[in-house]
Image 1 (cartoon, one colour):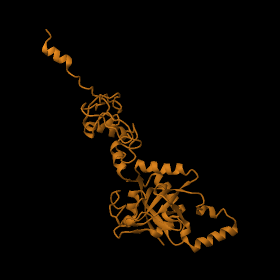
Image 2: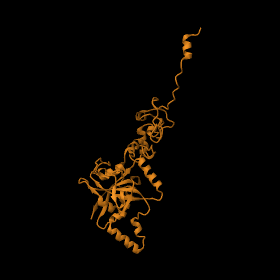
Image 3: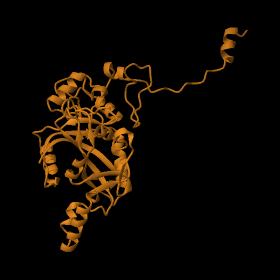
Image 4: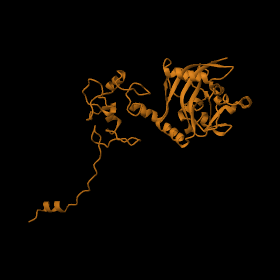
Length: 318
């Protein structure tokens, strides 16, 4: 006689097989996190990344430590050892904070998350070679018989990765374009440069609106400049010309200017080319320049064609 229990088990329908999930190596309960670039991390969340003690194929990268390294700490065993690795020069530090090791490109995990949202600022050391080179370029490009500048501070603009990608795509789509350093200025109503290296949220602050939006928005939400080529973005090779648009709040001793990388189409003649022309054409060019300084402006039709790369805090004297 067939057992009813056995008979029921033979005829019971089988449950569908569930696909196996690639679970977090820390908690083993949730699927692993996949970021916007398609990279699959060994953990499911920030909590597991910070507190996890799961297995790793590599040892802690700090010399002398035998603990297990964790991807959340750039293959160091703890956040403290990650900082020690940067401090001791065993690994390169994040280009933004210079405290944690690089894990996503040239940034640490925390700073990469911040920069994905909006640009960040980092002060350039005044006694370093980068500051000295930028100051030399700024002063050599400044052409004015009436006003001379003194560069006091420089902030580097750390841009979101997607903005740099769009700029590179713009250049690759226009292979004949040339990238040049240009200068753009506007009103700065905040006390930028006097306290922390941060952008303000005032809609009337032209400088911070431009940097925060990467030239997609100007003061009061305006989307473009107006000029000789119509609607677009205008900047100058000569920072003295951009200085005409620079205004600052009364509480700041600085004027502020944006140093840009602009991709320009052929035919936008810069000031260096005037000196290579014949005398007659050179005189004609100078007369045209005297007739309208606006003709010195450089034009970019789209925000993807120009990047804010540095902020210059400076003073002027006559």
